[in-house]
Length: 412
Image (cartoon, rainbow, N blue to C red; front, top):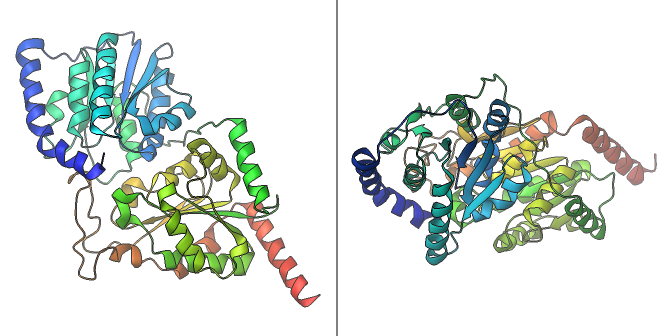
């Protein structure tokens, strides 16, 4: 199902349905704010985005620490099942499939029937603006339901307890505030929660790298080039990726690995065609499962990515990442792990997609679509990497590689 279509349906059909469910609960079921002293079952609800799943993990970990004996389940999309499993934080993972309308309806009904019978003590809705999740939580929940109160979204009245949304706070902290409202202890610093992949996934990635001639001492830089068709305006120009690759290869002899979905392979191929030294470049688009992709990131020294879940995967694995932002704001969704930074041209129209407009907005910039991403030059990204990035070990290897190349060329 197209994400844009889903959001239009959620906006224009979800609002009247939300009021209908409110009337149903008010006059026939009743609301309660009571949560038992002993919380035995907690349900986390988050549908959209692998990156969002990763950003809510500090909140889930805090809930586990507060309610030691509780089972914590998650309801999410089928596309998020792998990352949910890799967190090792959930007892049960329930999914809804959005491949097509039939699968969506059938899996949603199945999930509803199972979850309704579970009688959760606490349900936390981590969706920022979707009415579907609010309705689902209200119909499932019989006790305490926690969610975000966002202006003009007409959904907060279905929660028993709410946190007022603040558009100037990173989503990691916003998500954590929901956990605090549910009893978790406050923390000033929220550490990224590592995801765990299987050993065989790392072995497959190592074989792929070896087959492509990557040596153990090579410095690996991942370029995550795609953003899926639903978010194409978040893409950085292919020519800029190519210029950045040429500079890094020429200066340091790094190996560049392009990653993305299978349908984004053509983007990588076009970018690679602009790169002078193709022997230093690997195209891995569509060749890796999520777990293998996470393993590749862990093996890399730096990730350069547009505004996608890749930024947050790298953050939680403590791999330095450079995030490239335009339509969306890094203030809310920027990288937040060790050695991370972002580039963002805050134009007068930026950001144009927000949680207030359900991330549905058309670019109206006078210079044309994507002006904000085109405004980020490869030169400034190179300087940012040069001055701030690569951990100590990687920087040492870069310097040695550069020295060896100079020695090979001059014989001195």
